[in-house]
Image 1 (cartoon, rainbow, N blue to C red):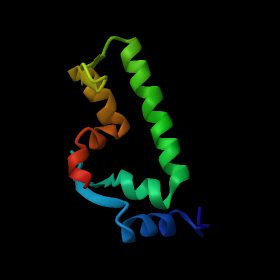
Image 2: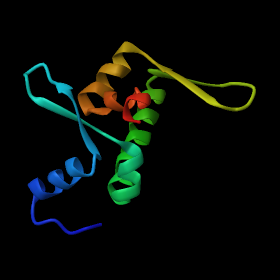
Image 3: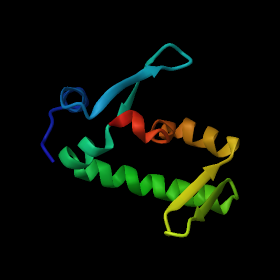
Image 4: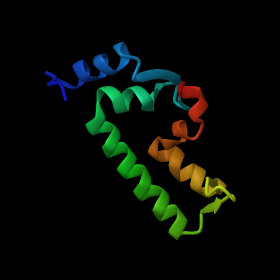
Length: 105
């Protein structure tokens, strides 16, 4: 990964390369950003892997707490659903932005 002088330079890189895109405003009227996972994986793979690992661990915890249901169709494609409580946990961690993948393309 490229070396950055500080956090601001890193965030500028993410924004300039459309890795981090404007998502909206928070309840406190602060700007919120989403990550374009395809570009993140391509340009900053270490960060992508770290985020994916944390998301996997979080989803596994939610599954263990019976807050996520995982089902497979006849072609073994995975389908999952989450409870409102699980969504709130993901939202607090900032992962709700990944639940609508089509917005990132």
